[in-house]
Length: 394
Image (cartoon, rainbow, N blue to C red; front, top):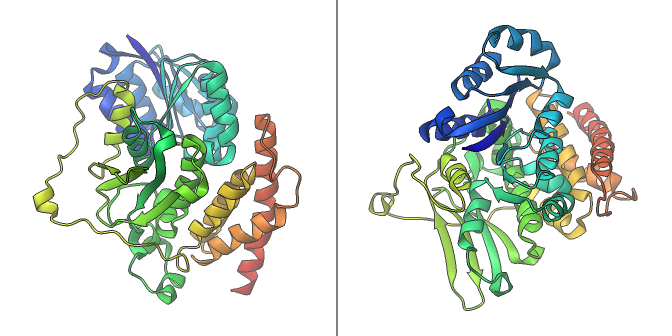
């Protein structure tokens, strides 16, 4: 019986993972070591009961009494807070889903790798903020990282059995989000509700807005650099409104290997859960005749400057990704709160990167997690100042 843990169980990726695990037999097929979630205590408890989890952890200590009450008598241990989540990752599991959103997912993911098992990585920020450290930790401990982003899972599958020295380019696709056909003026005046209304995917508020601004795609470009090791000039993004082709890999003989799949995250999650083999996944099968056509276009970096900023980060490496991510998260907070406009988010990130680039940590390859967290803290302070100035100008 395989053992598993799901970090971020009550989010969209966690829910899809839970669905697949239950379809494969639930507690009859897997021993669930740990489940973690946020404030949705009722749902976390339901999952813990269904999987007979050994441990359930809420990220919020003030929610611990409620979690303890609803799981009383079940035999499931409960805990709360960031430290409890980190300690849950120290409990070895054969397979761990890292689906906590944001920089908060970095610590448990790093700890899980030290046990030399398999980490299914859905947390973009881990590779963006600490890619070199994360990959080194995996190598040193004999651990396996499986990408769960649909784009990186697609690249991973397209590269199976291939010599990476023969790869000329990697192309990841972007839906373009809700604003792919909007004018710059209209985008500038958009609301939070408009930004979070994704046309293809059902996701949470923050990731949906990241998709609308293409910061989500910017993170994925950086992830591609860190996970696969390709140089920045070999990594591209194209807008593909149908979200059927998730990525393409071009080889030295001119061939282009494309991975097609439905717009359903269970496809990539299922691949990681069944790896190194393949198993049945309950997603829609593609009917090419019904789709009829697949279209692609070059992204407009005037409307979506996040892509240009991502290339700067890929060139700088070191801890520039940690600064980029921290600034992006702060800018997003301010946009959701109505304090800055949609296009101000990219401006805040660019100003933050310029402001912290002179710090010795900025271009340094991190030796320890503490350095990553230090740059994260520095960039968040700088981003708060930049966002505050932007707010005053509105």
